[in-house]
Image 1 (cartoon, one colour):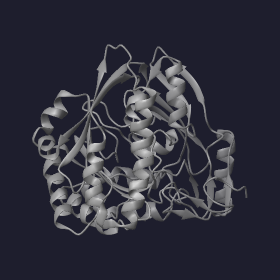
Image 2: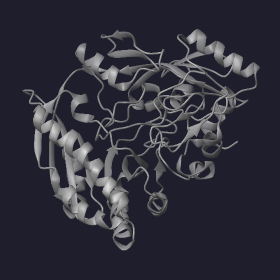
Image 3: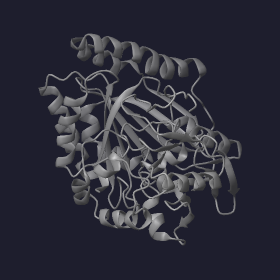
Image 4: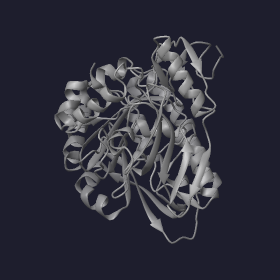
Length: 439
């Protein structure tokens, strides 16, 4: 077995370091045919199969004790159809490579998340999203999928072809098959003007509906133990391009958001009592700024400080109440939280198990620095989120099971019935899927 970047030979670890797996063997297929053969061979050997991306999920969604499929040879753009406004990419392509390649072709995705280290299939299969009033998750921009099924056959789907598979497989959590290629809707590259500015918690929550309505992409961060938030509004712009200068970009994105932030978190981990004072300084460290650039340079930023994360989608109209309950809980508790809470939104979509399926949603993400005890905070937060019919992100920490999901996803049974049809022997199963989808 080859040794890999994410662990010594035979052990796979995720990015956060909280999930490990010891597969019987690893394969790195260089073609769809090789992947099909690997799935058939696994079936002959009675082994389960999972594909892994870059390990950016905090759950064990990709863990396996069977055959681990590494997708790094299944990368690159298969084709661009300018007339249809689509690009087809191999599943193992990192989002970063896709974004750079599209920009070179004068194209862009409409919306994206805030990091781009993940593979396209890992990001979409778990429901990765950014923030948007009208534009939704990365998976919602999918126009077609190619999958290798449990019997090794290859299935393609879209709105017209195998539509029932398309409805579910765009966010399939790896349960229906192994995605080998994705066709995304793209558009001519455009400019976004980002306006970042501090705002008080009370003002953001009081004005949330207006801030949401007036901006194409609105998000904010609340710093626990303070009444301070940092807001970000991204809107399309006629230009001219005015990127962040290299110096101020380095100071804000590398030094403050990564370097100093890491040092501050190390101090907070060692001496938790310092966290509220640090939070007050941190929440004021980033000053207001405005810049204009192409989408991926505005939407995404590097994240080098490792953390644990839980994120829930609640109905958008329940956001302010949910957030105020979270703040009250933190204020009254002995918890010491050094990471900001991130709030984003998404319009309703038509994907079976999307966190925004059938309802306008707001996302609340809580984080803890890696190596600090996170369970008490996450448990208390989860109690608040689930009271508002929250739906957890498939790739982030949560304790929910199939019974819970059957209650918050009206189309849950549609997904599990399709899984029974496509993977009756649970070739793509693992412990995580057994918990969230049932046996």
